[in-house]
Image 1 (cartoon, rainbow, N blue to C red):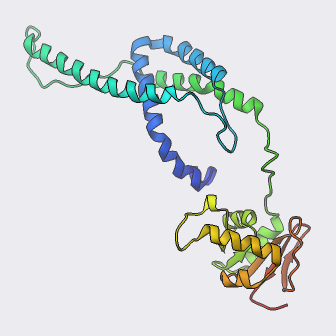
Image 2 (image 1 turned 90 degrees about the vertical axis):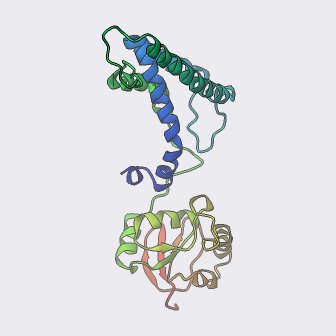
Image 3 (image 1 turned 180 degrees about the vertical axis):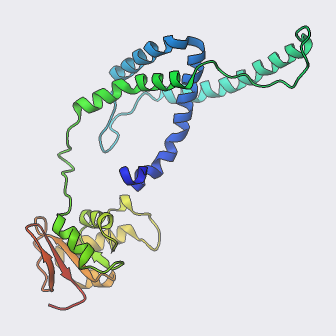
Length: 261
């Protein structure tokens, strides 16, 4: 469901954030045991301070992250907490064995749990990130560097109805990426950022060949890639090959490469 709602690449990256999520939840759980309900205003106040000092960076590329010191504090503090936790737990167990409670049965010791409830921890987590979310929502605007360029409904219908399933469709890198998401076909090239860099994929070699085709119009390039269909964004490329036209609208043209014009 996350892949469908966002993207496959983002859902793959989500695994890298899981350790941080567990550490975040664990830290709030400890604080909930210490502060109880006082954790809620503290979490909100800390979230506001964090946002004011280090505003969230929501650009396509990270321009300026937080202080590097935070990483060292987390690494050193985490290691120290593990050592102290083991020492204190061993000390506690040794004291229980030396001074058992009167009338208490001697049982195997077990690790205690914090008193903070999961609901309190969840609310505190929301309050902590709320200032960042409010700032992001209030200052969001479309990027001029990445204008939206969806496929037209007519082209999508033609790709699904006219092009056989599993056929190879050739187009520019951006259009190819969207075609792969809209129709059950293969594409011959896409931005290397979205392609696994393997010997079979050869993303950079394919990108260079793609650029060469849209600069020269040499039909041998898409045919060598095994493409049987060609999509041209006529608002971006002055390319009009002499091929049978399967579909055309104000923006896109779909050509059949398997037949000569």
